[in-house]
Length: 403
Image (cartoon, rainbow, N blue to C red; front, side, top):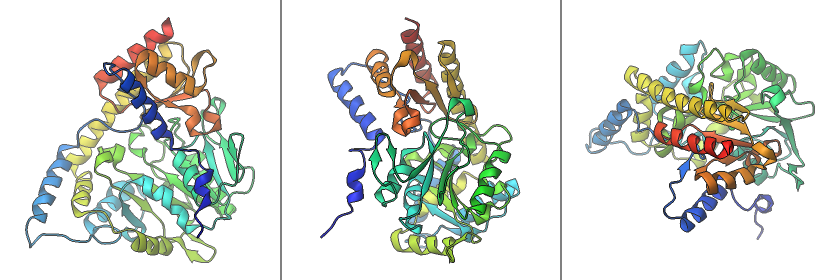
């Protein structure tokens, strides 16, 4: 037999597993250390009260024969699909049909699995720095080529730099698939409508498909677009991924959704029909209890409670940003984003800074080099811890860099 040898091309483990391993080793050697994590983007605030109430009610439904639910509909219950359609799209003047929405167990699954729709010869363009899943999933599928130096030979890298506020330029060479994430993970950069429209126009002109990760759209506080479908022509070139993880604290509940418009056709095939067939074959749907919880996010009470939680995290991001800036560090993010991206001081590499913060300040963050070659020399901190721990962590960092 033969195995998929593309797995052997990957680095030995996933970025966040490396961080967890290093942190665990330090903790084992220093059991009394008060380690504060501003690394992985996991939330700390409890679920909104409206969501908790919906969960309890859904559990009660499952206890009665009359209201019990077994296998869910393949792509989502109507009550959630309609809430998504009205709350996330019609409210912004965008028309998306319920049969273009596919509920999933979190955006990460679909951003990795969407490659099932595309041939392995397609060329993938990614921003650099970039969320590692976009790269690793395509490497696993055979689209990476060889890893030479710090690049995959078959990827097109759209290098994002401080000079461009970490926004990418349009591809200058051929690409079939373009991965975009705004507000961006890891840099926190947000794109305006005119900038996003340029990518939509480019994709339609070049018969490419945009994979648009909008997992952090709820953190947008100004007039930037929340959905790529706010741009003219996006339905003929873009697939959008959404998540309840950061919006409503669902990292432990697991729910999100993907939008595949019926107007999106490539190589004579409907990608909507293909994704429906893929999901019905490989995925058994999201539990009734979870979908009831997600629907509660769109209730007036749930929406207000989610906004309160998002404001809490945005305040944490501002605390981090202001403290690091006061320490003389160059920072990006915090506005429209739960992430703060900053330049490592004194010529430190990203992993050297990780070790310094862990060993000398007992603060865990994410090395920028883990997000791609252009991330070297940068570092990411998240705003998802408590305010108290965030303040303690940045005070330690300030003390470290002021010495």
